[in-house]
Amino acid sequence: MRISAAQRTENENRIRAAMDRLLRGEIPPGGKCDIKTLATTAEVDRTAFYGTRPYAHLRTEFERRLQTLQDAGEIPDPREAQITRLKAENAKLRERLAQSEQTIDELTDFRSQALSRLAAQHEEIVHLRDTAAAANRVTRLPAGRGTTIGSCS
Image (tube, rainbow, N blue to C red; front, side, top):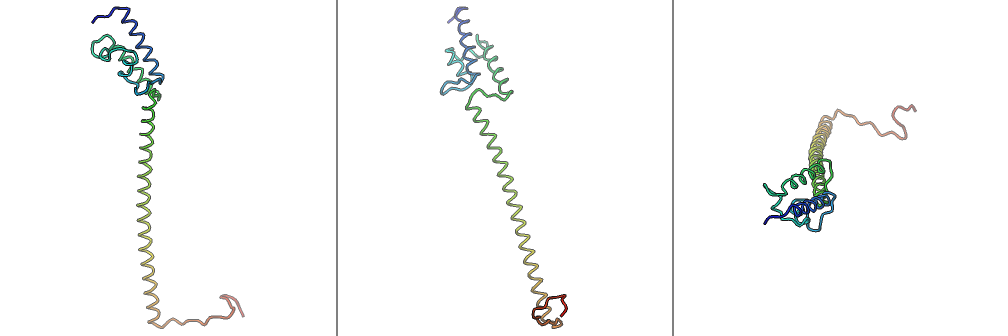
């Protein structure tokens, strides 16, 4: 079905108005900032935006403007902004988790090494005590009464 030039101009005006609303973030409930929602909002058949159809240039303009906004860090669709924010937060939490796991592994290794060293030192002390007791070369000094080492009486 052919449309008149006036109808085409009216449709293009509706499409541009809908495009502006979507790019400002005025997304209808259940919609997104995409061609499907643009076509529905402008009350135009979605297929008219593809190929050599009459409004393909408006689809290209819409996608270009949307990409420009996204490149500038603005996301008109609040759901898309939330998804982007949650993905970034998820990545950050995964990094923190990896760092925590690495720290736990390092501390576990340190604990194992410390326990091994303490066990070795204990064994050495026990060995030295046994050697000293067996040699009987060590003379124990009597405990002094109220005197301290280095004091003269």
